Length: 36
Image 1: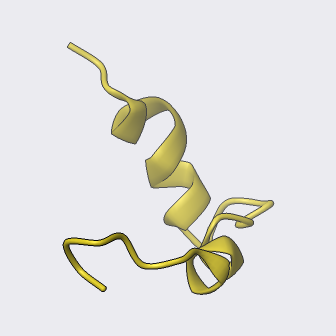
Image 2: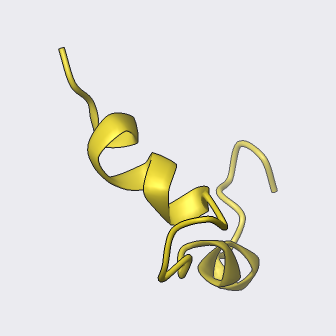
């Protein structure tokens, strides 16, 4: 079974793939109530 990790997230977080554009957005996200 494939998941979003296999098809999307793994490549977005891997600097060997271009564009690696997911990481900059992590810093911009507001913390959720359970982790904030």
